[in-house]
Amino acid sequence: MLTQLNLDRHPCFNADVKGACGRIHLPVAPQCNIKCNYCNRKYDCVNESRPGVTSAVLSPVQALRYMESVLEKEPRITVAGIAGPGDPFTNAFEMLETVRLIREKYPEMLLCLASNGLNLAPHVDELAQIGVSHVTLTVNAVDPEIGRKIYSWVRDGKVIYRGLQAAELLLERQLEAIEALKAKGIVVKINTIVIPGVNDDHIEDVARKMAELGVDLLNCMPMFPNADTPFESVPEPSREQMTAIRKKAEEHLPQMRHCTRCRADAVGLLDDDKTSEFRSCLSTCATSLPSSDERPYVAVGTMEGLLVNQHLGEASRFHIWKKTPEGFMKVGERSAPPTGGGPKRWEELARTLMDCRAVLVSGIGEFPRKILTQAGILPVEMSGFIEMGLEAVFSGGNLQGLKARRNGCTQGKGCQGDGAGC
Image (cartoon, rainbow, N blue to C red):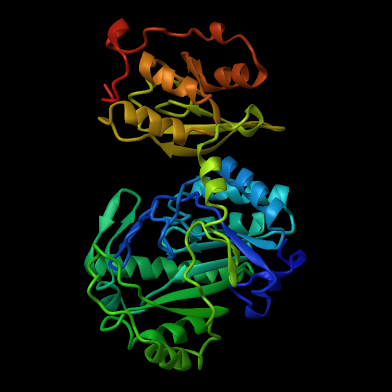
């Protein structure tokens, strides 16, 4: 796949085309698995242009629709990227579905991801198969003693690490990811945030180590002091400091000097950014309901992955299924919103399942039923094997024959679904 793509059309990796080739960032990854001491992710801060900021978050289907709308007005886009506002591999399902959809619709589009690298390595084979050609990792230190000053915590699955242990784990995973990416022929750029008094004397060590791993490009980015962060009082490095740092690093790796610190919803040319122009389009796509053709999935409340046997309020995770020519296939899992949120819990669940045509559960309260139905998601109460429900939903069969349990909740007819997770 990579050999069929013109890799020179990426403006961030090739400064010669930044006036002719554009990029679009698709904000489908809201969650993050590390906490950097310089980061404050304000999703709706329209006046800020920096990583981690977006005006809206899209589902994969909404991202494709947004892509289509943008290309109608800005055909110079050659790169579709996912750069947050969190980390793509903390939102692996949404990220992978988005790049698959883009690849199917636009086979010549370059696909690019930006990550901290913590959870990247397990997905490298799939990225190569889809045809992701460019990946950027943020590596701020190759010495855990320095890294521990930069990260508040690192979350691996359900375990949170802090201090030296967190920095060691993150660095180990980053090095593993880079080696795996280069083994697949994927172009790798490293972003290194230059933090005065913390890692500014360490950048050459980073460059040297990255060069040993075969990295293609290094982007030394001056830290931007963000309010309400541990580093808010750390001054931004001067232009003279950055020039000197890049000169040293360039002895080991080519340098990117035309970075514009893009938002997670950036769109347009680097020299002609049109993020503001497309903001209303982004918001419209983020709030619009998908058509039936744009809902390829069904969500399932299940304890063991075989039977539909969880009440909507009980399920902490939903299994996501789709129909393929070979039969039904589970494509991932999605976390349910935390209990105790009241009505907002069901509104958030509706957004989480926006690309699902139905949700199969053993019981559901009247209020969440109403919210999901208004969002175009069919609530199906049933008991039995998951594939029975999938067959009925995808074939338009008799849903009444699924042994629907109208009062499946333990609270009986009085349950309205208050979001408590009872």
